[in-house]
Image (cartoon, rainbow, N blue to C red):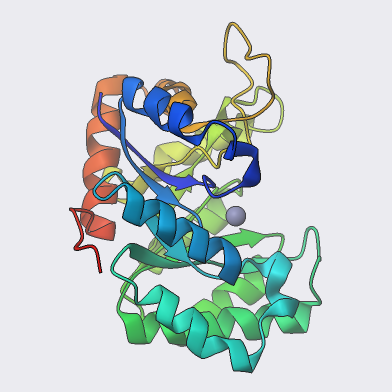
Amino acid sequence: MQLIDIGANLAHDSFDADRDAVMQRAAQAGVAQMMVTGSSIESARRAIELARAHPGVLFATAGVHPHHAADLTAEALPELEALARDPAVVANGECGLDYFRDFSPRDLQRRAFAWQLEIAGRTGKPVFLHQRDAHDDFIAILREHRAQLAGGVAHCFTAGEKERDAYLELGLAIGITGWINDERRGLHLREVVRGIPPDRLMLESDAPYLLPRDIRPAPKSRRNEPAFLPWVVRAVAAARGEPPEAVATYTTATARAFFKMGTFPIS
Ligand SMILES: [Zn+2]
């Protein structure tokens, strides 16, 4: 199996002590390439550094998560755009709206989201999208900018059929995490995932978050890592009634084509 993890928060400080070992375990588990999520200007910078140190294996995204939307000022936009244009960056984001936590005021979330879609339109790279409990505003803002966008992925999708179909209709891809392994809150996803075409489906760990709940033996640490992505493959395969190898093959092909992951020149 050769897998691509489109959403690993490898710049997170929980990996500071053993990042190389984490990457090694990922490789052993068949995770050939990973996208390191940049969720603030600072973490995007760290994600780019990591990607430069591991060309062809790690790739970065550059964006400001809705939780941090209040920190994104008009003055900071040129800096964010410069990061997004870095050759190590394959997507703008993560960006979007999160009305579940509401860590930033909603009007500032909408402003930061729209700004980042404008940047994405100029960079020509796809968007890495985050949405929680904000579907209507999210779709409305996305629709306004859709014509300028190179495409996007709704990462860590946990919603229902209505949201799935709205995203597919906008030409977006959908990222599935270990949420689907959760026998309580992930049950509905096992139905919803059946309606995603293979060329729109991608997999992600969202490490260090969302440790798949069905890993046996359960890891001592609650920290998730990309090496556990095969558990997500198996859950998706079981839900769709397909062999895990087939899911691995087409999700990898989809991610690779979508984010144009080859090797990139080190600048
Ligand atoms: Zn997210």
